[in-house]
Image (cartoon, rainbow, N blue to C red):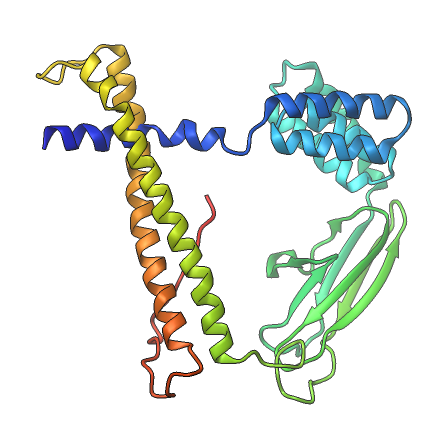
Length: 307
């Protein structure tokens, strides 16, 4: 029992550094940043922005965001630049000289910001949603003057039982507009926003494959973290005595272990539940099965979280 307890504690702590390491590549980010600076000096701002954006994705840094904001402003994307300069002010202390510069740059851009207010027409059916340039605007974003970049924008309204309604608008710097959008005509087939309703059997099998994949991934994570725990057990033995008295290294291992244990346990639980749900959906959604196959109850809800 004592050995098992040590393994769990060790497992908990290894998740935090392991998770932080995933998706980070400081070396590549630095190289991309330098290429972005060179492109900006040469006046090739589209290329510079792309390099800064990818550098920041690989290793987020306030300096990269500042350079990206400057680059976006050069391209005339004033709303994007304004947002990025404000991000810099939130990420660096007031004593940092970039804080004051970013604050002034953001203020200078405010009069240039185009603002677009979008509203749904009265009487729009329940479930209607609005997408601006492919991004859904939630209920809180409607009837609000939101900054956008100058240039063309596409508004789409989708509603159950209706065809899509599309509206184009182009804004210049400092322009303010309000659009009231209605839903499209009713679909002849009576289906969803695209005019067709997906097959229940097809949907169940699709979700079955999705959940099965999530389950397999969860079990894999649980297995990998378990192997990592076994490999780190020696650190506990070397730095803690039988009376559970540990030196600093041992205490650090105990502290970091708690996080990985939670991740490992959660991975096994989520993975097992997702795999079981996926297998059930695949079996119950098999078109060869009779229609009397067991159906999921109305209270069942599945959720997949991205960590």
